[in-house]
Image (cartoon, rainbow over all chains, first blue to last red; front, side, top):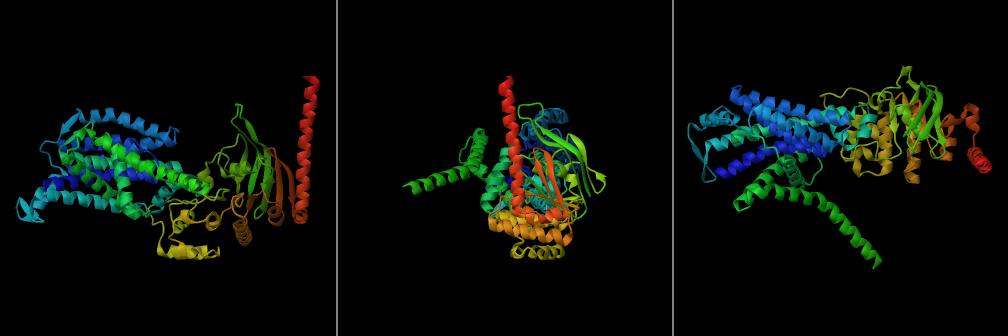
Length: 313
Length: 270
């Protein structure tokens, strides 16, 4: 039970990252590598602040802000200085590696016994359960701690998703969605596509920073390597979500991305359980994303060839 | 209204692909006039419209709209004055947004976009009404994604979007060239109606002789980056397609003459 609840919690945390990737990759069609750095940056900043005693709320908010700043930097490098989108992200990601080491002062920083969002949630959960350590869930025992943390992360993700949904239906948010769709049009309608893209990347990386901050607090440490592969993980979640929902409506896609993040994490847990070597995880994920990205094209090609063949026959 | 003073533009300057697209073009467009821009391929007519819209910054000369010098303004800033419809029906609309969302974006052209709701019920009703004037039945499909519509429908919507906030200047860049004849005809009729109704100052690039003679109150003809003919008033009204064809033929002959003369000189002296 604990393993399932833990997987769900991590899945929900990762789905925040997936939302960030959805914004950059799907809304802006921008393959933003800087999310790998801002994810770790969020974790590093949150951990350092929590250890310093500034409380989980302040630490998490700070992580969101620095993540956003990193994204804005990528946006400025790309839009103002016309650096290729992929390279702009890689530059920021690489620079962040050093910055993250400076922030943490070491390559792996444990939280120790400092208060995290998880410990706060557990305290609240304990007072609600009347001091009981475990409760029965679907006939099996589950610790109040696991349940409380799961509920807290779910709450955070719900609030974040609702805020995103509301934002993308404001005048500015709608202009952002249009920018990714057709930047020529948004210029002709009087908004700077550069400003929109920069703001969008800031929003995307703020989500990554939030995700990193929560993961570090949940697992009890920040690690310099924890950001590696986050873009592909996020993409896998986005693609799984789209396949689950099959709609192009914004609200559906946001929820789909979260479900995709959850499903991805559960698949990973199952795969590890049945004996997948953890070292192969990123290889398998990358292969999955590759297949998901190219199979629609291959299918279309195959159909065209078949139709052409049928005509000639 | 629009003052263009001696603008020049050379693309890829200093390379083997150097193209002098505009050659000291000057043009004054009065308030409320409807100018047809005609010319051969590569004559610079679309480049002229693009220069006004701010798609690039001109090398020399000045452009002012409504007495405001906009020569150095970026494209998005000029959009507060200018409504545009492009040749490509896909350029003017965002395919993954609904019809209503596209129109809502256009309803704030040139204005600040803040945290207010992009689209509310009251506005939805207004947009519905505006779309029904197109007579295409699209008012019942406002929640559909624009990407699911035909080129003609998208172009009609782009035209509506460009005039939703009344523009000081409307730029139409061969906006029917990519459409089938029936859709083109429909879009031209809507264009004529909207421009006449709101007395919009308009510049329209076209390839069609029929459109050139039947629409507008002024016609300029471009060739090799220069304005070679400027017809207004009675002259424009009397114009027949044959006159335009004759003029094109004249230009073509002059070109041939130029080339054969150059050839003659080359053979003699080199």
